[in-house]
Image (cartoon, rainbow, N blue to C red; front, top):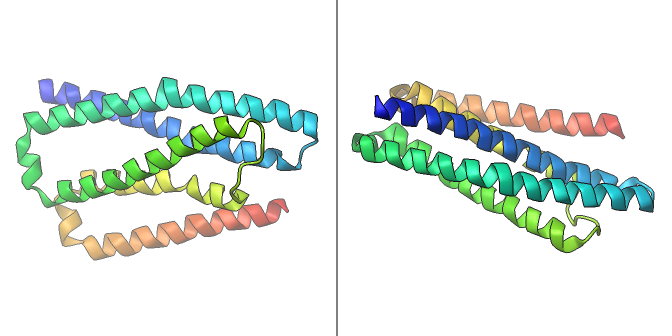
Length: 181
């Protein structure tokens, strides 16, 4: 019963964490979108987006990430047999990618603060593509956990399917951005 409760907490805070990360990178995109605005509007919005990004990071993303991590570690202690399962090792590798993405986001939050209203030195399209990385990681983790033993047997079909998904999403982002111009 305790394991199931911890698992529910883990899932709830995983959802909260990803919601925060999704919105955070969207705020970076909105900040970058201000490049074409007049100076007064640009400065007002950039200040607001910086404030929102810092609050989101400090109040939602980091606390949810910590609770997600702690509950995950508690589940691992309660069920150490997970470490013997191949699908779990695959999940851990995706979580390492999520950790790298987390640190990229943290650097961007710090960068916004240090820019003090100056332009964000990254192309808009790159930010929009970076916004999809968390989605890819979420897909990988959820499919790995849900499919468990099938992941090992059907790894190449899942890999091809995932790569097709990545290409479709990236192409859609580029297409949407071209139509905006």
